[in-house]
Image (cartoon, rainbow, N blue to C red; front, top):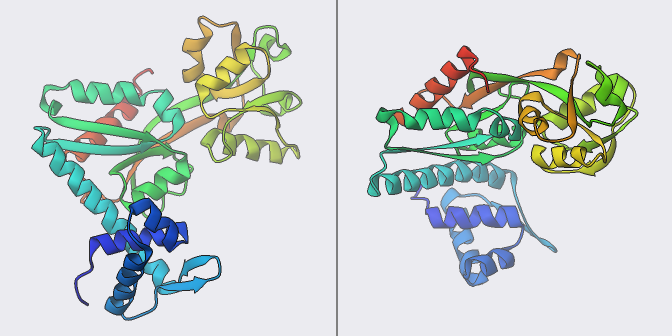
Length: 304
């Protein structure tokens, strides 16, 4: 097989995702005929049709889907190479990219990464973090868009290597005047009659709550939908609804707001998180140092 051009692969991936040559041409400021020519040459190179032209755009063939998966991996690796080399060029000797869930970002991770970077031996390492829901964290690590992921350990982590990180405790947060706020602890089934502040459907917390409600033959009454815990806590403090939030996130807020934290007695309310990566061999030395540091922090159970 002749050499595969990275620009052509990038355009091919964009066309597959956008389902439109014209749309990609507009985004990339390239005439559509030039993209079509590159795609035709790509099909000639691999020796099989990759796209099917339809009335409303184009769709990849089975061979195209396979090439798309490889192209994404290659493009992600090339992007990582460019970032790492740019880091060296500016005097930074290592760059580690992480994908993490909202719970991890809101709780312990920032402090753990800060402690890692404060070590004199790590002063030339750069760490960047991006927030995603657990399924997207796993997908991103599989695709090579980041070296390390941290997510709920109940996610499908098959095909990845993992190590334990930290755990948290989900609790009900309610305005101090709310009936639930007077309880010492509750089970989730006891509060299903109230209105909730909810998170996105694919977030780890929301997945847990939907499952727990289904077991009781009920659904959550969503009054407000927010994208993060800080917004959920502000809605609760306005006494518009109650919410389920990690206790570790709610405690600092509760010190100055008129809300109460009521522990959940359900077994699933204690969650564990995992650090995941494609393989220890694939980790750069800097990423391996960070994984080891996070594993030690999780094992030690350092307070948040």
